[in-house]
Amino acid sequence: MSYLSEQQIIRRKKLDQLKLLGINPYPSEEYPITNTIRNIQKDFLEKENVTIAGRLMRLRILGKASFGEIKDHTGSLQVYFTKNDLTSNKINKEDTYNILLKKILDIGDIIGVEGFLFKTKMDEITIHVHKLTLLSKSIRTLPQVKVDKNKKIYDAFSNIEQRYRMRYVDLIVNDDVKNIFLKRTRIIQEIRNFLDKKKYLEVDTPVLQSIPGGAIARPFETYHNTLGIPLYLRIANELYLKRLIIGGFHGVYEFSKNFRNEGMDRFHNPEFTVLELYVAYKDYYWMMDFTEKMMKHLFDLFHEEENDNINFKTPFPRIPILDAIKKHTGFDIKSMDKSDLRKVCQELHIEENIKMSKAKLIENIFEEKCEKHYQNPTFIIDYPIEMSPLTKKHRCDESLSERFELIINGKEIANAYSELNDPIDQLYRLREQVKLSKKKTEEEFMFIDRDFIRALEFGMPPTAGVGIGIDRLVMLLTKKKSIQEVLFFPQMRPEKKGKK
Image (cartoon, rainbow, N blue to C red; front, side, top):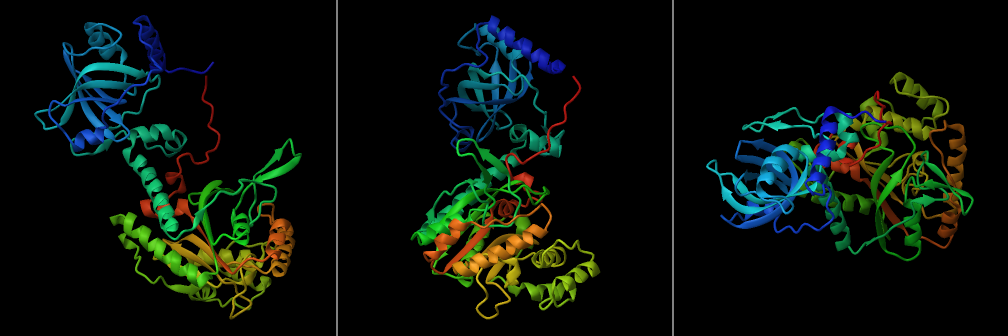
């Protein structure tokens, strides 16, 4: 039996009191609402009769009159109760005020109120309530966040682990948290509008895949009983979107939920959202221009003054990755083999080991020593071919690939290619990646999707593709430093059990 706090016991006893009064603490009938709080505040009309519903956030009993605060999905509003005017549809007027309001109602209860609007002497819009309906009894105590007249907050619900684990409470008591997620939705809607105006088609591709392709990552594995085969949560949707380009679509995109069974930190969650876009008859130069326009558009719409330290002036700089490494480390690694790169990592005090591929070593050098220097939007371009198995060789230098990453605020926001459409070269390069992955740790794997190779053999037009990290983009535009702040329900370690 779980331990109940004193407050939980008291509130459960109130359930019995309600039933004795003939009041269902969780009624099933529809509660008709005439207004939202935002509309009331926007179009205030003295003496107007209104009906609203929401959560009781404050209650101050003053004898024969009481004040409270009700909060719906649009805002908060003061409510006013008097002993002589307050009624309920189940009990008499006196019991409504003296028992239901004063003794049974608690902060956190969800109520419906009917009444007329007026302004107090302090010019605060208030509902004079003449009918009170209990819609849902809360049997746990909400954190009491206090705000003084100068808007200073006391006793905030600020414990990070509790906030992420109990996001529902976080949303109730911290208004700014709700605003983050409203903004996230608007950002995604605006991206969708931007792409739809270009006549690109939004699609859905499988989350459960027989082969986790399109990236090098450790997948989550499950098992399908009827088919008798292992299945994987997708690590990327790239190969399926390319199949659609092969099938004849000109431009396709997807807001993809991807899953990677890897580490967690303030920039990584096992489940994350990526926008992937593929457009036929384009290359990575075109995609750079397109990405630049879309990012500038989003920044102009959603940036906050705090973001003004980031300059979104176009055109964004375009810097080859090897030039960036040379500038920030002093090492010219263009002709280095794996052994030389390991020595460079040792000199720079960067993690390395014999199992790391050449691509991984270069990636570590760039992320550790270069990435942080690019606060303003910058395209890092022309990656060594070893780092990009799904990318075309560079038209001017076959040791490089036609790839770019967009770095903003010191972190990768987008990754894009001139997509490799030569099926023979693609199969060879995937095989090479498989050989390398077998030598690595268990953290990363590469699989060959032979159906994708077969699809390429039917012919894929020249194509540009880009993946944009939606979570990181929202972090940027809401000025948050942790991915957990922009996910409703980030992955958490199992909750520790308290003593019974």
